[in-house]
Amino acid sequence: MTPSPAVPPLYTPPHPRPMGALPSLLRVLRHGDGNLLELLPAEAYQFAVGNLGYSRRSTVLFNDPILVQQILRDADGVFPKSDLMVNALEPLIGSSIFVTDGERWRRQRAMIDPAFSQLRIGLAFPAMQAAVADHIATLRSHAETGQSFSIDLAMSHLTADIICRTTFSTSLDSGVAHDVFEDFTEFERSVAQVDIFRLIFQRAWAEVEQPASVLAACERIRGHLGTLVDSHLAPDAQFNDIASAVIAARDDASGEPFTRDELIDQLGVFFLAGHETSASVLTWVFYLLAEQPQWAARLRDEVDAVVGQDTIGFEHTRKLPLVKAFFRETLRLYPPITFMPRVALEATTIGPRKLKRGALVMISPWTLHRHSDYWQSPHTFQPERFLAANEAALHPGAYIPFGGGPHVCVGAGFAQTEAILIIASLVRAFDFKRADTGPVRPAARLTTRPAQQIQLHVACCSQGAS
Ligand code: HEM
Image 1 (cartoon, rainbow, N blue to C red):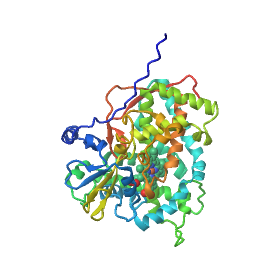
Image 2 (image 1 turned 90 degrees about the vertical axis):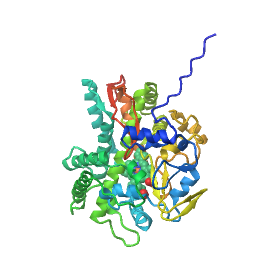
Image 3 (image 1 turned 135 degrees about the horizontal axis):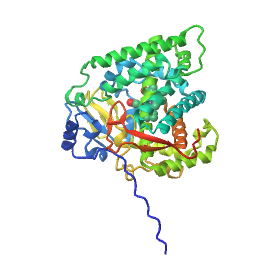
Image 4 (image 1 turned 180 degrees about the vertical axis):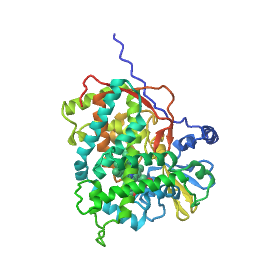
């Protein structure tokens, strides 16, 4: 009798080993880089609602999908975005849709939604293709020289290029766009969405000045964005991009457009939320492909079967279920937005839990996506979970990489189209391999990133399609 082939063991990619609360705190202090992921105790992956850590300020983590949706819907206007996040982002994106609430937010959202319709994404697609084609040329030269490169930086560059081309009709190589990118990189290096030390030691709504380097970078970025906006506001301007759609938008009630300052806020947030998040998840995608060449081969086979020798078109991005499942499973294990902090404006009760005024209400795609009540073998990488045949088994409300409720990500459709195009294009052209063997530590920064950049090698694969 022939022995049946061994079932390959399930792959568990890197994640902080959940420990008790005190050892978790010691781990964070030992590493000294304030990585909130390492502070999460083992119970955070098991409880429905619980206190988080040792903070001076009451910090409550909600993992129950029904309560999470209730908080995100925020029917009574009690849970705006937290002061910690607003404080960190305000110098950069002023009062943009990402940080506002209430009537002001409703007006902004209604004016911005049409810029991200399916129709608009279709119009933006050729600009995405052009950016990906340029990126493939860069990777080909890495393949020829055998030079290793940081996948983190490569994905930041590619997704920033896509945002520049689709929003402002200019590539990242142009002077101003390049300056925006450089200054954003400086900003991201220095700012944290949830600063762990502030979280532990400070009271709600404490006024904390950002470091001078962050404020200076914000001022420079707003100056560059102003130049890009002005090029679109010029009387003879003729653009058909995301910026022009936002400029054309009118407030339903007053008929007024966004002011120049408001445009800088809104378009700045597209740059920030739209490139940093996609770069985060794509960094993990290519790391995971380098670690699992058998998956790279499966994805390549699917792309070959669906696209053949053609250029990957908009319609193809809707017909690649395995590529999409791989992307969604990566978003599950490494959700770019690790935490969505809210603040309780008043003392209130939610589910079984009483909250004090000023309590920090934490919703974490990271813990919800790895929670033992909602996922089987939660830390293992299994894209098949997201194939149509298995989707009925997914726990409703336990998968929230794009948030939920009215503030759900405005760019989710854009991000998915872009990611599928990038994964499909690169996987059919290249094999990816790690250039270093050091341990990989996920860290919660502005988005979920490897604590140290990951170096990869590429080789042109035999099919070598463009
Ligand atoms: C994989 C990529 C992306 C992920 C995982 C992601 C995730 C999220 C999440 C979780 C939120 C909700 C935050 C909260 O409620 O606290 C959000 C909001 C938002 N995202 Fe995304 N995003 C991505 C790509 C994009 C892109 C490409 C754009 C635009 C170009 C964008 C623009 C926005 C904006 C403007 C908001 C604020 C919406 C509002 O408050 O009404 N995002 N995103």
